[in-house]
Amino acid sequence: MKKPDQTMKIENSTSQDIEEIFRLYRLATEFQKTRFTVHWPEFDRTMVETEIAEKRQWKIIIDNQVACVWATTFDDPQIWEEKNADPAVYIHRIATNPVFRGNSLVERIVESAKEYARLHQKRFVRLDTVGNNPGLIAYYTKCGFDFLGLLKLKSTAGLPAHYDNATVSLFEIDLEGASPVVNNKEHTR
Image (cartoon, rainbow, N blue to C red):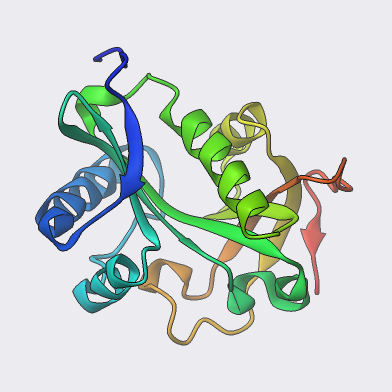
């Protein structure tokens, strides 16, 4: 574990980062296989290249090394269904370089996402994770998210393979106040 210092910065990923992004995805998938039943598939390179071109792929740099990557979007209808109409920033695919685990990088991402949401007049910061994972639920709650409950996905066409026939845990930060929390209940939207 390497402790962050004054040289930490958050910025958009570039096309020069693509190999490192996929290396971190592979490492995250290997880590997931040791802890969870559901793990990431190999992601589509074109999807990531599009995110980079649209400035929706991010990185944390510490001491000139990529410490963490993630993607954002303003639209996530297959997962958030009718709530997708809400003004929100959605966070996806957080992958941390193992050298930098334990440095509260998700908390940094959350703070950055809040600023980004306010800049773009969005009320919510949201994320999801596949399955009912009490450890991740506790962790994301510790990072400031409200756990909204579980949702069985209806349509996953076009989503990465780990969403096929999945139930997801939904998380949200309401920047204008407390959002209703529906802990540990299956949503049937």
